[in-house]
Length: 297
Image (cartoon, rainbow, N blue to C red):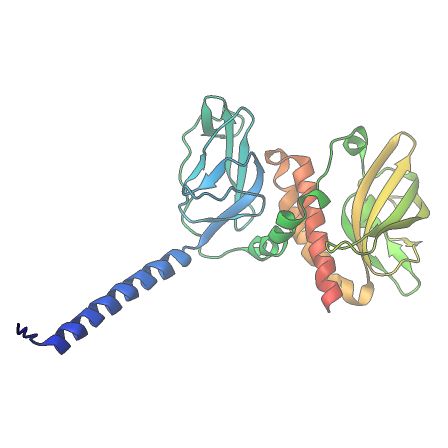
C-alpha cells in the first residue's frame, strides 16, 4: 500500500501558526482581564456570602473591587451588609439584606433599591489607594488584632488613636490623644502593642498621671518610653477608654503624623455610614502599618 502525503511541511507550518495565534489571543484575553482597574474596596462586611462578578472568593475587609463589578449575596440573611468606598475613600455603595433579599441603601431608606454595578474606574486612584493596599493584608491575616468590642467604656471614651511626638527629654505632646477630653486628671496605663509577628506585646504597663488642660494642649508630658506602637488605657472617675498610639521622635515623626492624620480624616468622614468600631479598627491598622514601615528603616 502506497500513501502519498502532499505539502506536509506547509500543513504543519499552518498548524503551528494557527496554534500560535490561538495562544496569543488567549494570553491577550488573560492580560485584558488582569488589567481591569480597581474602582473601590470593601470597607465593612457582614457574612461570607458576598461576592463580586460571581467569583467563589468571599469579600472581606480591604478587598479591592474591579470597575463595573457586580456585587451579590449568594445566601442572604437578615442583617447581612456590605459597605464599599471608591479609591478616594468616599462611600459609594451600602447594601443590606433581609430574609427576602438584598438591596442598596440610599440615605436612610429601606435599602430596597436595585444593586447597580460598580462605576467605571476613576482617572486617578486617590490617596487612600496606597493606604488600603498597605493595610488590607493586615486585616486578612490578623482580623482579631484590630477588633473593637462594644462596651460602656467605649461609648464614653474621649481619647483618640494618634501619633505622639516625643522630644529629646522623653516628653510627649498628648494634644492629639486628649483633644476631645475635658480638663482634669487622667490615669494612663501604657503597654507595648507588639507586632503582627507576635513579638514584644504586653509586659508591665507604665503608669502615667496627666493633668490635662485644653487651654495649654502642647505641654509635654514625661513619658520616658522608646519609639514604637503602644496601647494606652485611661480611667477618670466613671470613664475609661483605650487608644493606640504610635510614639516616635520629633526628628522622624512629622511624615508619619501627617500621613496618619490625612488617613484618619477620611475614615472619620464616613460618619454613621460605617460603624464606629470599624472606623477605629482601620485607624489602628494604619498605625500598625506605619510602625512596621518605621521599623524597617
